[in-house]
Image (cartoon, rainbow, N blue to C red):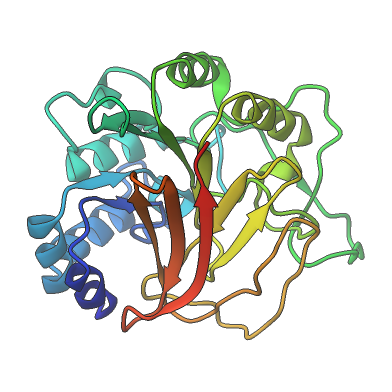
Amino acid sequence: MPIFSALLASEPELFVFLGDNVYGDAKAGQASLPELRTAYATLAQHADFQTVIQSVPILSVWDDHDFADNDGGRTFAYKETAEDLFEQFWADSPTDSRSERPGVYSSWTFGPDGERVQFLLLDTRFFRSELTRKRKGQFMKPGRYVESKADEQDMLGDQQWQWLESQLNQPADLRIVVSSIQVLAEKHGWERWGLLPTERTRLLELLHAKENVVIVSGDRHWASTYRDETGLTEMTTSAINRPSMHRFTETGPLQFTQPYVDPNYGEITIDWESRIIQMRILDVSGNSVVQVPIKLK
């Protein structure tokens, strides 16, 4: 993972693992999840990873492949075991309360009054209802899924929704919402919040009611940026070392930069004096390939 050398050269104050941090899908169907255990053990021994975790404070959340079920949600039979392994591996802080409740969502706030940054890491796996697969011969757009018309849709679960609403009422000067899957992306048929449109609307209503919010997501094996009519901006950044196998162009109504399909990582820098943040996507050498400035209100 040579990209970590470029990352460390910029001397980051914090690094967030967005999910798909390992690939441990339960292909054997064993309750002990041997594939996930092996994946964590392999990552733990990797020299580049060891350098990062010894140098930079880490926050983490999961996506489907460290949930151990590709595109999986609440019906995954071994999700409690996957959560136990996640929490044992990351052990973010003695004050981390995730082991006391279902799911791996968490909130962290750093900085003094006037420069408080709140990170809200959402769990889009443990509680999520089933997605709607395409019917045979249904090829309107790339991907496996179509938007659900079900009356009962759930992305976060009642407890996590209540937690999110309460956290958004906490004081913060900048909120960084971390979702392993894309929020603002539209049209494609891969995993995204828009496949459960009722849930996406609920989330956006909460975020639109607050000032100085940005979204960071992963999952797609490439990077791009999105912005809606209110100015809410999302940076999708992935993957550190497993880029897309396909060289392609994807567009959507809220997308305002073309996908960058080589290994990449995202960076957010904050200038509190000018009240400008820069969201950047950087390549394996640390060169900026996308840069989006945002003026804080």
